[in-house]
Image: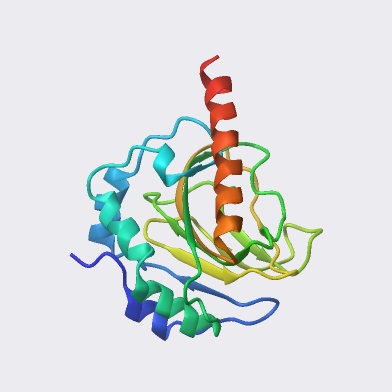
Length: 207
């Protein structure tokens, strides 16, 4: 069973304005996406978690192996015109969002490329749909809106104007985020920040 449709990524044109991005529905083919949805870890609170802080099902590790493998890295290097040789890769998971999530931002300068793959069976909510924006001030001033539907990929090159966000959604919203980082130190710092945040949220959740 194929876990990633790399050919779909290769043939999807890169959009370059106002920043470089690509959207690929069905990047994880449906059968594989449904299996990964079943293996997606239960996360009872909002926030990004390092992969090792979660307990995914047995098939999920195969997906992570492909997401962090040389074939996908080579595809993104070609797509975005970046040399990603030796760049560390960071994987984080999100299981839920809260009201304050989705505020407009550009991602940390430590990140070179952000790739999000969604694992939600259908999406009826008006909130939680990722919007790629022209600027930092208006969530409605968008160039694209991406429902977080099963198997969909949205990837973009981080820049000073790679603004994105979404309207509020409170509840389940499953995604895997893969980042190609500037350096190993930058990846370690980001992961530590996510670990501390996760520990705080876990305490608040069960206090």
